[in-house]
Amino acid sequence: MLRRHATLIIACGALAREIAALRRANDWAAFDVQCLPPELHNRPEHIVPAVRAQLQVHRPHYRNIFVAYADCGTGGMLDSLLREAGVERLPGAHCYEFFAGSAAFAALQDAEPGTFYLTDFLLRHFDRLVTRGLGLDEHPELAGEYFRNYRRLVYLAQTRSEERAEEAHAIAARLGLQFEYRYTGYGDLEASLGAVLARRQQVEWQP
Image 1: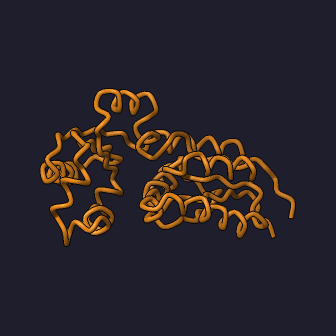
Image 2: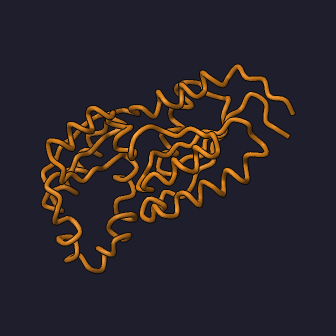
């Protein structure tokens, strides 16, 4: 049976906390969330098959589905899938762009193309996803090879925290990168989800 007055958000697991926070702050009740593992970002070729599988499972139960991913390294393959399915996604190439905003992100890239970006999620899980994920815990000497084309680390912060800013600064120092802090809040994530719900919250679904 179809859910009444509900939209399904198929989301990157790296956005789970942010979506939950926006849901509480805006009193959004008319959607469900299904998160995919955030580790998919280390293997972007697996994102499209994972999203396709979720669409196949949930399409019979929801008429409205939104995908909370940007392109995220899929090289346009995610857009091809979503066009065929008639499903929208978040704007931009990746979460850095929709958190910072397209114009601001383009300016950051123009100023220094060799920039490594952190978000709140990546900062919280840096050791698991980067240090251990890249094998730097066992072979720290590889850091120079992995990050040799980077000159700067920019922390795009979704929440204000001096402690987290200091942690990000410490990571930049450890990698030998210049550090820059930008508070972005939730950027286009909030606007995109809000627009989806505004368009669909009045839709009456037929079983």
